Image (cartoon, rainbow, N blue to C red; front, side):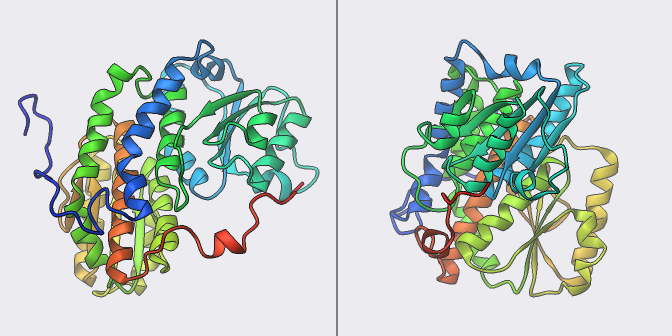
Length: 373
């Protein structure tokens, strides 16, 4: 423990420089290591704006957050925290997070957007056909579109009324620092993290600590690499983080994974679980007695069937392996959890021999700039 009572991680002094060092030569390692700097740059860019998006968003009568892939997963991670912020501020407006393709592939008579909507479109590239098509639909009815993107010269940025930049530099592989930065931007737009850099240093320091604590995640990732099946599960904000973990697992480890809630796992998938399997349990929201008791119940059931437990949480778990989250508040823990899930995917991919830079299918088969409307 530190002098102020904060939890600490084991010292994570960098070991020998090899292909699995925290900032090693593979793309994901370098991008993961620069994630905290991306968060800092994103918050700093928001702090410099006179027309703070939080002020603009605060006036909206209804907010819709759109995304696909990793962008949708981090939006779902942020959603419960954004709702809580609205409630604490006395705002009773609807807040909807949905996949961008719903806006262009749903029933033609469905009222997806209204003129008084504020639509937050999250996209790393800003050219995904789903997000561009949805944004055009929103603009057509007079809605206000805010783009959260790493490409401020993209078609999405040109269409939007407002652009919230996520400065990442180059990123060719799985969404690591871009998704982390987008999550930070969403939280900052609702005033859930400090935008001014001096005030954000505690948050950035916790993220840097998670990056340095690579060896712990690497060890667990090695063990997960030999698992027959992997589940990612969490309640509330952790449910979106679990979805992000499953995506990373497919993209980097190249093996199937299932994201669910703890209750969803108990009522079905546990029937197929056994000693060759593992479950990653993510905890982000503030602890409550009823949820603590529920998670202890699930932990005992996992022990009964022999499923390996990996916890990504602030509190020490009842059983299994533990990657600690240092942040005292849920928004910081959400960002830390995403770093930890990235580390697990990277470690497992290297251990399984399936790691590759970039994408094979997404880079050559999946079209990301085709007209979709």
